[in-house]
Length: 349
Ligand code: PMP
Image (spheres, rainbow, N blue to C red):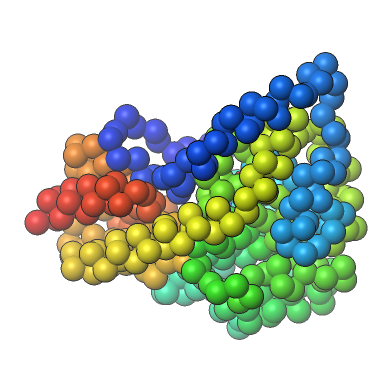
C-alpha cells in the first residue's frame, strides 16, 4: 500500500492543507496555561471525556451520550471503520473524495466500492440511492463539503442515502469537516439536523479548520447513543489526553469565534473565485475553505512546480483519479491570497 502524504515544502505562502490562516484568539495561550497549572499530571485523564463531550453536545443541542470525541476527525473515522467495517465488510465512497476514507477502510481490511461523482462533482439523490442499493456498503461515506472538490450536497442526497442503507442495515457517515464554510444561515441544512436515535447516521466534525486548532488534534462524531457506545468499545482507553480535553473546553467558551473566522474565510474565498474567473483556469463552486481549479491549456503539475518556484505551495491533485490537471488552493490570509493570485497570473501569462 501507499501511505497518505501531503508534501511540506519550505515556502512563504503555504496553502496546501486547508488549515485556518489565523491563530486562535488572543489570550488563548495564557488561559490555557492557567488551566494546565491545575492538572494532576500523575493521573490518567477522564477516560470518557464527559466534560468535553457535554460541552460539544450543548453546541449542537444534543446529549453527551451522542458525542464521541477523538484525536482529530481522522481518529473518529478510524474508530468508526474499526467498529463497522473491516474484513468481510464493504465501504462505499463517491470519488474523488477525501483519501483517508478509502485508505483507512483498506487498512482495516474492508472492501472498498466506489462510484464516480458527476461532472460537477456532486453525487445527487438518484446516484446515491442506486449505488447504495447495488453495492449495499456497510458504511457509506458522504463528504459535504467534499474534499478536494468543495462540493456541497443537497439534503435530498443524504435523505436518499439514509433511506437506502436503512433498507439493508448499513450506516451513512457524513464528513462535515468544512461545514462552517458553506456560508449557510443559522438554521439551514447540516446532516446534524437528521440525527435521531433510530437513524443510521453519523456526522463527523473537526476542530482543525474553522476552530483553528489543527495542531491540537481534536475531532468528534455526533451519532445515536448506541453507536457512540460501540465506538467506545473499540477505541484505546485514555486515547484523548488531558491537554486536548482542556483545550477543547477552553475553545467551547467562545464558539462564536469559529463562525466569525469562517465568515472571513468565506469572504476571501469569494474574492479568490472572482479573481480566478479572470484567469485561464476552470474552477468549481466551493462551500469549503479551499477552491479546486484546473489551468486550461497548461499542465497542472507544471503550474504547481512554477508556483513553488515563486514560494507558493498549493495541493497538487493533478495525478488523482478523476482530477487530472487539478490543483487545490486553501484560502489563506488576504495577503497570502493576493500573493497566490499574483504568482498564478504570472505563471499562466
Ligand atoms: N475529513 C476531511 C474531509 C478532511 O479534509 C480532513 C483533513 N484534511 C479530515 C477529515 C481530518 O481532519 P482532522 O483529523 O484534522 O480532524
